[in-house]
Every structure is written in C-alpha cells, then in structure tokens.
Image (cartoon, rainbow, N blue to C red):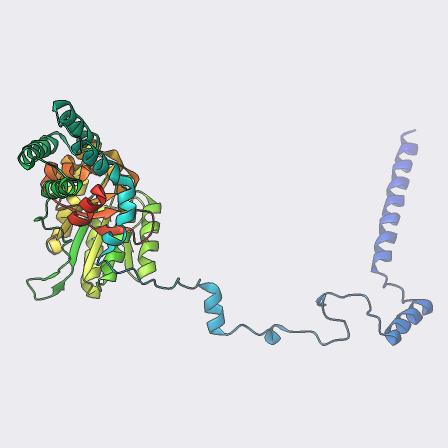
Length: 407
C-alpha cells in the first residue's frame, strides 16, 4: 500500500515538472512573423499617408514620418524675456501732491465734520439775551467737542467779558470775535514744523534726520508713516522707511507698499524679530544711502502694558547710538476723544513726544481734541489726517482749522 502511494506522488511531481518546462520553452520562442495579410494592411496605410502605430518617444503633435525633435532643438526664451517672466514689473513711482496749501484744499472736508461746533457757538452767541443758562449751553457745546474742562472755562470767561464790553453784536462782529478767541486757544505761535533736517556726525559724516512714529494699534500709525513719506517726497526729500513693527507681518508689507509707490526703500526684519535692531539698521541704511530722512514705524504699543512700553523706550535709545532722534510723532485717533489723552500721557513719559499726528479728524465732530491734547502734553499738533486718500495727510494750519470750524 505504501509503495502505491509513493508511486502516485512521484507521478504527480513528474507531471508538474514537465508542464513548467514546456511553459518556459514557449516563452523563449520568438514571436511569429506577421502574416501576409497584416503586412499588406500596413503597406496600404503607408501608401495612403496614414500614420502607423505610435511608438515610444513619438511626439503627439508630430507624425511618425516627420523628423522628431531632440532636446538640442528646443529653443529657450531670451534672457530679458525670462527675467520679465520671473520677476513682476515694479509699479510706477507716483508723484505726490505738493504739501503747500494742502490743508486749505481739504478745508471743505474738515468743515463738513466740524462746523457743527462753530455753527452752534455762533447761534448761541447771537441770542438777544446772553444769560447764565445760555453761557452754560456754550460751555456744554465746547465740552461735547472734547475741548477739555480747563480750556473751555478759559474760552467762556474771555467770551463773556468781550461780549459784555462789545455791547451790540452783529453777526460779522461775533464771527470775528469767536475766530480770534479760538485761534488764541489753538495757538498760532507754536512750532508746527516736522523737523526733518539732518546733521553731521563727529566724524564729519552726513546723517539723516530720524523720525520715530509711535502710537496704539488701530490709530492709523503705519498708514500715517506711509503718508508722511509722501509729504516728504513731495517736498523734495529722499526717505528710507524702517518697518520696526515686527509683530505684525502685515504692517511691514503695508509700509513697503507705501514706500514702493514713491520710490522709498524699506528696511525690514524677520517677523517677531527685535524692533530696536530693525530701527538701528534703517538708520544705518539711511546713512549709507545719503538719505535726508529715516522714518521708523514702531509697533503699536498698548499703553497698559509696561513691558511693551519699556521696549519702545529701548528702540529710541538704540537709534540714538547713531545720532539724535529729531522728531517723535505720536499718532492719535481723533474719534477716541478724551480716551486719547490717557494714551498720550503714557507715551510722552516713555519717549518724549515732540508732536502729534491727529488722524480721522474728518470723521468726528469733536475737533476740540486739538486743543485738549496740546494742553495735556504741551506739544503741538503738527499733522492731521482728513480722509482715506494717499495725500489726505496735511500739515496742521491753525487758521485754516478755525476757519473750517466757524464756516
């Protein structure tokens, strides 16, 4: 029985081996030549001009009978054309509007937002009988416009005395009286020029003027820096911008866009980098390029965070290693009213503010903040923003401002 099983196993193994050998031999046999019918069909297609079967390496757009391209035959575009494709074309440099008389041109826009104050005062002063109740209304009108308690009491006191002496009051006399007193309140003898005159270092090297722009986030600080660059370029100054607001990548991009529009170079650092280092590099770049002014846009410091305010002081100290800071402009939002004074006080303690840039003045009827912030800090308003346009930043002119108030 065991012998029969062994014989059966040997037979099965032999059958499997013979089958595998026959399959291998068949694979090694060459493919049979095409039949005469197939050869005839292929020749007929060639005579008719029809393409044959595509082969490896054939170009889909090139027939098999055409000469095939090699890599040497592929022409590269000219170098100039390749550079144009690789780098986008720089935007054309704009020519900003001249700054002389800019506030006068924007007076109508200022008057639309501010003449509520002037018109209200003139209406009250024109009453036949100016009793205590009327003077209280005049005082309330001034306080509502954010003139501040001290300046309001001072103005009302002077108006009461002059109206009493004047006796009869024509509309023209009242307007002239109010204009004179408002001008005295705003101040016509303050130095409102943005100091952009450079100097000479101890080694005799020309040094650009340095302007630090500081303020809380949301006041329009970076935009004001860009618009100030346009003001300076319009006055024939060359400018280097320092994007020291390294905590917001969008701020550096925004400032660079402003610079490109007027041909001003922007120095920036890595996101989250040291703002003082960027400010230092910007001043150094300004010296190397022989620029007239370096504008440094600092990070929007929250006045409630002492650590961040200390860092702002550090930026100023580091910049001063290369020379004095000529101007520290504090950007305030006119629509915040008296809240802006709290910010102003803290910034003044840290970086010795020398001037105010008041933005969004066309968006509020509280133009009295001009008076209040000057009294609070003892420094003048030097620039005012009156719109969203690139040339809507204007040097502050007290007379044009008061004329817009009273219409």
